[in-house]
Image (tube, rainbow, N blue to C red; front, side, top):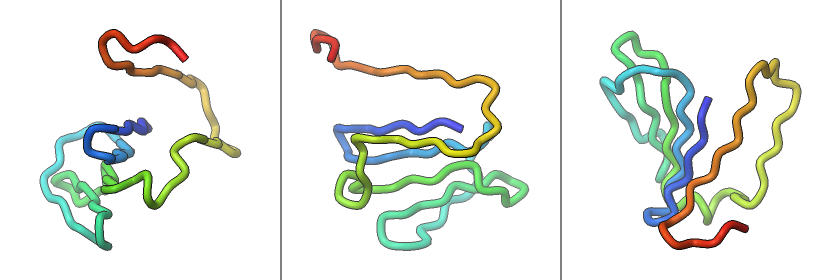
Length: 81
């Protein structure tokens, strides 16, 4: 599972599984689900994410994690935090 925030569009995308989106459906204002060909949800898009979620903190509870990867993307020339 991958969480990616696009600051330029204020959109948060949660990639739940690998695959190609065959169909998308807006299930609530600003909430879009991506489905693969077998009708499995493979991604969730949240538009205007900063207005509906606290993006400053991510808490992971009780997940059977084997590989935890932290990565950060910065704009060119932006200093590290």
